[in-house]
Image (cartoon, rainbow, N blue to C red):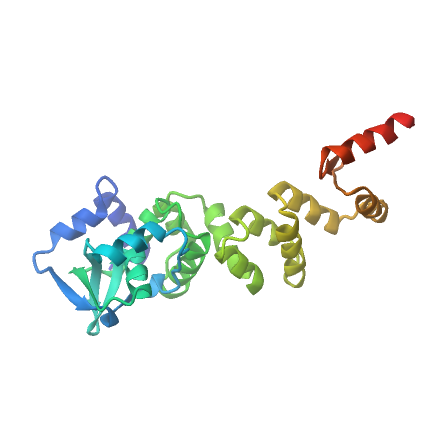
Length: 272
């Protein structure tokens, strides 16, 4: 009997050269399309933590509000209800608008095919929040015996990329909420993994208040771990001269808020 890894790899050969959704839609003779009550539809167990930015779904929301869900949502039947296999955003918007019924295409989709579908199409969803992958990957590993190697292979990622995405679950809850609400980026969140959980919120507030770049955050974390002997003097200078100073082993960068502060600094510098 094939294990999960063998089954998933056999699906790569079957589906990677074509569109898996089209193939699923065509290959089952006992399939059907119908209108069903929205109350009978739910996310599948792997994608149960899916969420989306309402701002990014503005056009889709307006379309569904005006015309309803035009294209059937691909589902599979489980225990008298229907699990979404493809069409998460349409389903999300339909729930938000409290539609009574939605069109669905009911197909027999195994766990292995569902796993392959989620992983193979994940990188094409450019506007999805990175945490959707974090939660889905963790469920696949914990509940479906999918290895990081398989996740990397099917999603066309490196194992280190998969590991970094999984590590986001270790962020402080407040930081994860900020990432979920897109107040910070994936790159900024990754840097915060380098500090203790109890200090991540302190760094988070600095990132948001000062709109720090990934490089600036990296320098801030580096300074925290190996503080400069001049850190107190630097902070004092920043406050008195309305500027931001970043230091590395060989460089110092001073960023002023406006040209007048820069001119004043240059005048002082020329006097030495």
